[in-house]
Length: 385
Image 1 (cartoon, rainbow, N blue to C red):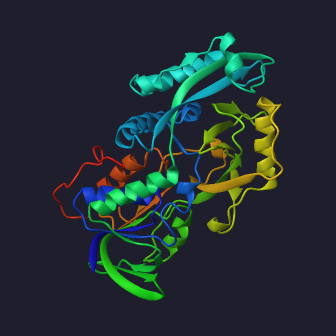
Image 2 (tube, rainbow, N blue to C red; image 1 turned 90 degrees about the horizontal axis):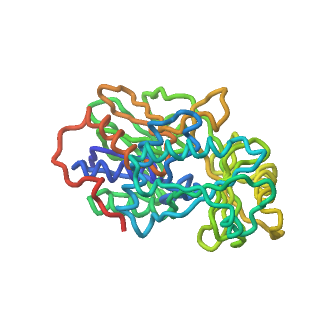
């Protein structure tokens, strides 16, 4: 069997590429070793957001793209992506002053094209008492703005179903074994139900997320890809102790921490910890747990936490750097065996919010090797239900 595009990985990025490739008229096969959204795509902060904190590292293009994609997803997936009010409290000892936050939110609105969903306000002091449990001592200001929440795993599965409706073939569970890029067509071997199968493909998309490096090692001849690190982001899952959404500053290192009601629970995260070892072994450490509890109780000192606290951990793929994880680019990393005639494209990192735009970039690169096809659909218009 021959496919024009073979996608390895059915996280949000792989699902997005499969949808984009099928919409562009290509035959597509997706290979996923466990389940759709089994990795990072089910372990995010569940936000479809512009990335307000990325303004501090001057990632203006990424923020603009993210805000555009957020607006699009609010239209395309109204049952999956919904706006929520986030609150940013500013105290006397906060690193960021009310002026800085106002300037950041104003720039955020500007980059959105002054979209109505990017409006914000500074709450008047008499309204602060309605922010249940929030420490009022030395509180100087509270800003309210909007971001969107989603079920990341369900969004991924929905995008994959959209791809299937366009003709994509999906093999789950199917373990990628090897690929040989020599010759006119690439030979791809995978295992399913204890048996090895072989297909051919024109372009291979490595969208295996934290496993992308391992997948790349199974491709011959080897493809040079940038050095990356896996950065663990962990979240606490608590009972519904709060019913409002907060964007907080960690008292320890001033990183952004989200406190978000989600599906009848309270989610607190995320951390940034270098992960070494197999991606599937990522789990919250005691250090991370204490870090998040410390932040939560700093702002909500009267909360009573349960003895047993659930958690989950996902892995971000970031470029290797001496910089802190917070300071590194969150843009997707694309690497091809040949930029002018790509047979293999590795897609690493990226954001849940921008998966569709990322898929467009991947396909614009892949089309340099693929024949022209008649457009079947436009992902900007495909409803996700």
